[in-house]
Length: 339
Image (tube, rainbow, N blue to C red; front, side, top):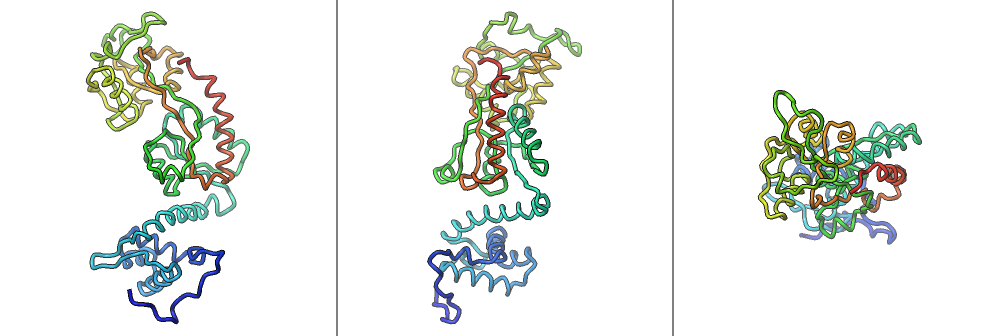
């Protein structure tokens, strides 16, 4: 690149301040918008500024950094190697700024943005959140339920403050930025119907648990009709892996449903069997609506973690969540059925 005129070259930065700290929020939002939209023109339109003004903001930002963030070509704008690193961190910072500007926080109300796998909403999280709300009347909590991999991705992008989820295959760079605190181990169980033998005109198969201490193998479940979540889900991979480890082909479910609570209702009403978290199946078993089949060997337990960005560990709402979860963990363990 040709050297810039001396008049436009920024003065040397003080040694205790980085170039990024001297940038305005307008410049940072523009850089993020260019990375998202792929061109300066589209980014300027999205932000409602003129293209000449956007060009000037970008030039001054790159001059302050001393390195180009984007490469321009006929098809648009793409990030340089330095630009990719810069924007990766910038996206987190902008998401945090957006959280500050949320209505709940702009009037002084603290906001905790939680992500959780559905299993945790059946066990430890409701107890913890109830305790937090009782202690902090102004606190607002946003809860997003979904698969652990999607939630951790949102956490890394700064869209969530904390996630309750499983361990995931992350690269070294991702692991270095996240903290995992183990909360409890969740057992997954196989469940069949309980109660009466006739439902909706159909006769249920004889129970596989005629005696309380009876244990069955996966081979004996091969011919049963299953309700399972779709392939790619945690529970489906768990049961498929168990069948393969036993030298058996995975079953083809009669019904596929992604929501384990829906599958439990299907089982309670008919002749299907399914998988469910022990914490969700046990209350239905105590009510006589389902039976938990005791497998030999049992399905492996899944560790559940509190996950957050390491640099956010001092956030007051996150510290309050952590304390509430630790208190709720003892209550949760006391309610778990024996393994």
